[in-house]
Image (cartoon, rainbow over all chains, first blue to last red; front, side, top):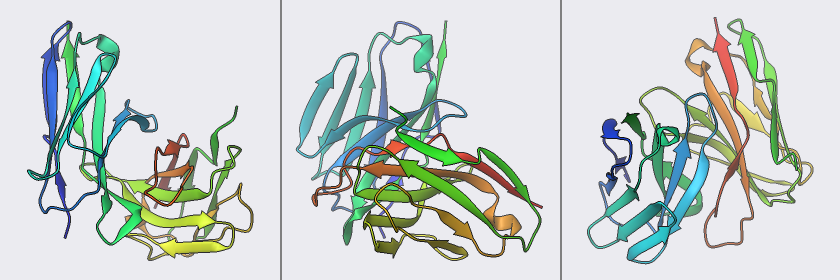
Length: 111
Length: 115
């Protein structure tokens, strides 16, 4: 089936840059979503990549390579409020109505 | 703007009890869905709907029912609660336009414990 893998946890320093990777076990996602989820809260949308390449949105950028089954979220000028889990998700091959989600990467920001 | 409203936020049930989680959105979204989130796992889709009168099963539908009588409301019913249904439940909606779900807007979540 389609699986999405992300690192479980990452640590970075305030003001630095961090890259969170997301890889597919099998090919065929028609685009990839990134969401942010603070502890005890609901996920909120960050980005959607449908084409290969880098999309920049302020301090956050997201990259997609469909041929390599690989995406990353790049966070620049890290702030303490960026401490959260980051979830990637892709539409199922057989149903665009359904998303398959990675387990999320917990990002810890240290002063 | 209320967005997506879920109730209750917390609920404790005994095994075998039934209950309904309510979800309402005021954004005129066609697409609505229910997810459960468990530690160490990705969000898992329970049921979804692409419009009033239309529902379908997701990845983990067993033990749950849904209905979509209006565009605004999408309740999730637990038929006979089991400890395995202890989880955090999220309702999410979007302007589905055929390509994919699009940006999902989530409710605040409902934390359910089944004893």
